[in-house]
Image (cartoon, rainbow, N blue to C red):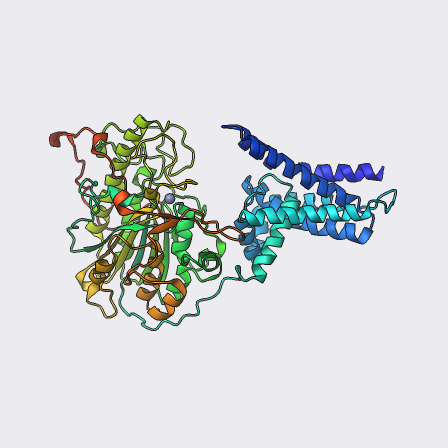
Length: 595
Ligand SMILES: [Zn+2]
């Protein structure tokens, strides 16, 4: 009777997590059947169940209760997370949640119901495993003790080899226990440490009111812009009218080829060999900016309603003075609203560090530009994606050879609007005197210029070199250049054109804030003034921790696929409407929809 009660309690506890099991099975069956993956997952799930039920029949009471306590407590966090976000909890999220455990009372206010689910599951599992057994026989004692522990070590081993990946759809108790073991290992080897405060001294405090802007675009391939190719589209950066000097680093290489990885590292710094530790343990760019006396402004264009973007979390937010979003601005106009907001900050006479995450040209791009910017045809069909800023879903795009031609034309039109007209609008109203803007994109795009079918543009497991090819331009005025400690960008370009890397931006910004160059570079590697001697390559295995190493994709510039001219019909000059001309700039006012 008691055995049946125990089994029932365990089954009820496990059934709490059934949605993730269903999702995992579904993902292995559709859109295509993955037989190997399906077999591996079924085996792993079965083994975890064997482990839990073996533990429930361990005859030695203290061992049984001890295991029950460990595994049920470990599961609370995973179940709470998965119930609240309705998705699998990756290992990274587990670490973030431990880091945020100091603000448990705030989390309770927000996620009380999910935490209750996790708690109830833990109690059921604790009792199900722990309660005494009717017939105590020592016959299989050793096996019953060994099985759950060996299975736990085996699971932790699998996750270790896979860099923390692979627990999707497994019982949360086992996932949590394995994550806890990996976390313990990383803490003991100091890969993860509590985030440090800023320790570097500000050696060169600047008294001017110049702002520093990191302007990070989304999915902009460097070779599509006129600054880098005679066939490129209008970028607004060739010769701005406003007296701003663009310093063009040419084609640069990104940190990685996925948005979150790149933005996380642009905000926290990192070197090729040491980015996991630096990303997770060193101060953010905001903390450095605040210590150097800047007000910190984060403008996030793609997201609305206070949803975090690109691995930002509550603890990072503590060093951000203003978080700007555009809830009420249509997606097509949001980059332009951000241009207005940025111009407002540049013109307000306060010394600010601004990180602007643009919406750029992420899929879907069918409707990212207004009708009058339909400069290149044939383009993707219009009207279905007006309200989607970015998605991994490729519904509405077949990936055929023909559809890539229309994609590239829509992409060109989007660039003219969200890069060219964006800069016209920004530089038409912003007074840059004393301020510096560093412009780049998170990653490039594979728009199938080489032919072939498929729907993925970036973040692919076997990337094309163009996925890491980004623009890199610094904008300032001669006035800025004249300030003490100002950077000689022309000298920097002479060394760094067509060979610089995203990794060099963070140390450069710290030096601009007034931190000592030598001390900065000892931690964060070389700046943009130093010729990049590292390979011209981006990391396509960014989640490289535990037993997984980064994988670098080298870019050879003479093998880059430039966009083919055969994509489009020339549109006669008289029929372009107001294609290239920017709208007249309105005076800088705080953007509507700003919170
Ligand atoms: Zn991106």
